[in-house]
Every structure is written in C-alpha cells, then in structure tokens.
Length: 147
Image (cartoon, rainbow, N blue to C red; front, side, top):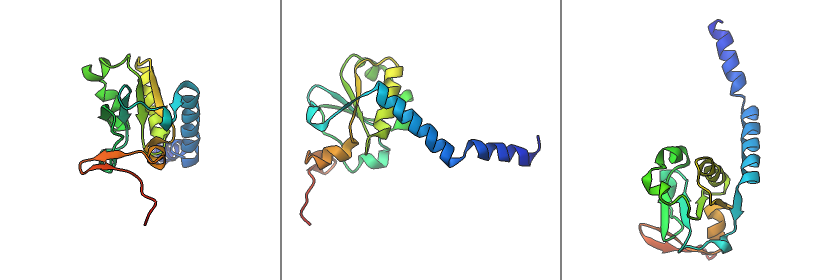
C-alpha cells in the first residue's frame, strides 16, 4: 500500500460524521445502562462525587460534596487506585459540564466493577441553574441573575 492509499484509509476512518455517529451511539448505550440522577436527589453528605471535567475547568468551581474527586475523564481508568476501590460499594455520581462525559465516566466505572454509579443529569450546569452553590479556591458561589 502506498502512502496516498494509507492516508485515504486513515481519513475514511476519521470522517467527522462517522465519528459523531459513533459518539452518539456510545452515549445512547450509556444512557440505557446508567441511571441519571437529578440535582434535587443529590446528597452531598453521603454520595461520592467525581468531577470528570478537565483540570482547567475545575478552577471555576466544583460541587461541594463531603467527598469529591476531580479526575479528568481521559485519566479516569488510570486513577482507579486503592482510594477509589475502597469506595466501590458507595453511591458514586459522576458529572461534567453538561452531562455527556459524566455519563461515559459512569459507564466506565460500572465496567470496572463499581456497582452503584450514576451520572448527574445535565452536569454541573444543571446544578448551577438550580441555584445551588459551587466551591472554588475563593469560596462558595451561586448563580446570580442580576447584572
């Protein structure tokens, strides 16, 4: 196979519409397997939350649960160490900005043997829109509709 044929095959595999279709299919499968929990049902004292956004997103604030981990989605499989394994029988809720990464992260944890894992429906965006506080290094903040 010459270089041009190899590149053509590569670009066929990387077709953006094909990739979007695979992502949509993966998300649909995750929705069928993973329960999504509403903001009103989150218990900050008993549930373990895992924020799977990227590290630069954590700085904007996290949901102030008693037990929270900030593990980017791309590093989740590698971060399942003794600390997380000890919590594998606890109720775990994964979240991201809008919900897709949290859903995929919850599916990954389920595949790794975590039995009580869910995803926050709508991600941290739904939390903020419900006028719930987030916390960052400056303190606690709530959404303000005043400009």
